[in-house]
Image 1 (cartoon, rainbow, N blue to C red):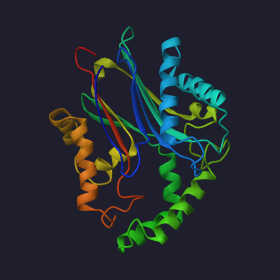
Image 2: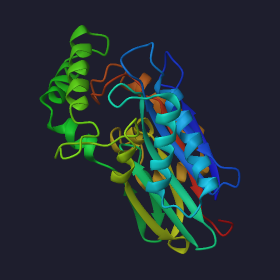
Image 3: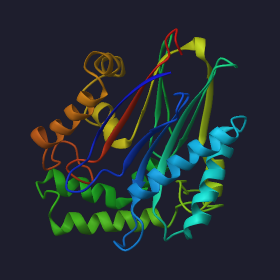
Image 4: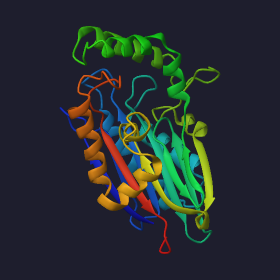
Length: 282
C-alpha cells in the first residue's frame, strides 16, 4: 500500500488524532482520542498514540489474528499496563486497514465514528459504525444545541457549554454497556468493545483507493458538502491529504466560524486523513 497522510489540530491544544503505519506499510491505524473530564488523568492523545502503537505491536507478533482479536489484545495490554479503569479512562475511536499480500485481500475495522472509505470499480463504499451517531440523534440536547447556534449564540456562550455537558452525560450513560440497546462502543479500558467493531474484507483486485479519516475530516464531505466522494478522491490525488484537511479547517474558520450554517460541537475539530493507493504495487 502507498500511504499519504494529512493532519491538523482543531486549535488551542495539540491534536488528539493519530495516524500510525507499520514498517512495511501493510497496516494503517487511525484513532481519535477522547480525554477524560479531569486534567490530571491521561489525555486522549496519549491514549490514541499508546493504543495505536500496541495494535501495530500485536499485529507484528501475530499477523494471523483477525482485526477484532488484534484490537482486543491491544486494549487488554494498554489497560493492564497503565491501570486504566472503565468509565474513568481516556478513550479513542479506532479504524484499522490491513493488506494481506499473500492472500491478495484487504481487511478493515471500524470502532465508533472513524470511517473507512473504499473506492471500488463501480463506486464508493463507506464502512462506518453508526451507533454513536444514532445515540446523539436521539438526544433532545442535540436539537437544542443546533437551535442555539443557528440563532447566533456561538461556541463560547455559556448555554452552548451547558448543552455540550448534557450531551456528554447522555453519551456516557451508554458507553460500552453490554445489553444496552442504545450502547455505542469505543476503545477504552473495556477490551470487549473490540468484539463489537464493524469489519469488512475485500479482494485487492476489487479496490482502487481507500481513505481512513477521523470525524473532523469526514465533516468536510458529509456535513459541509465541500466535495462529493468522487471529487474528494480526486482532490486527495491532485493536492494531497494535507491540503485537503487544511481546506476543511479553513472553511470552518472563514465561512462558518459561529456554527450558524453547520451546527457542531466546536469551531474546528482535529482532523486526520490517511490516503491509501491500492494500485498495481499494492
